[in-house]
Image 1 (cartoon, rainbow, N blue to C red):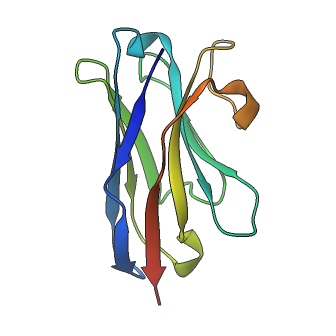
Image 2: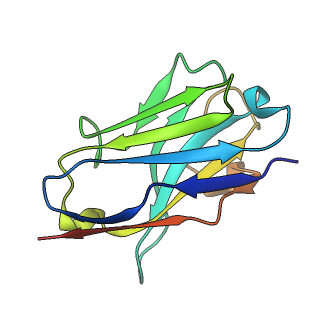
Length: 125
């Protein structure tokens, strides 16, 4: 079992940067690929970025490509999401997720086994 705890959310202005972190418990962190999703009120959950088990391969949604960067540190059991050039439409709850069905992370929430409780990001204009 893996427990995930996100941190780093907050209120920022448009154009600012923010770094989210997700700390994972357990000794099997490196056996999971990881991803970040977000969900705004009244909207569907949205895949943002994924990273494979070794951290060598990353995947991004078109909406955040070039602005967000996902990374992981298997020695520290953490996965991060560096966000830059934030926009008001980036306002949402941000969630990290862990999965191991298949080899590479997917954009389907149903492929992930564990989720964090989320951290709120609010971007003012």
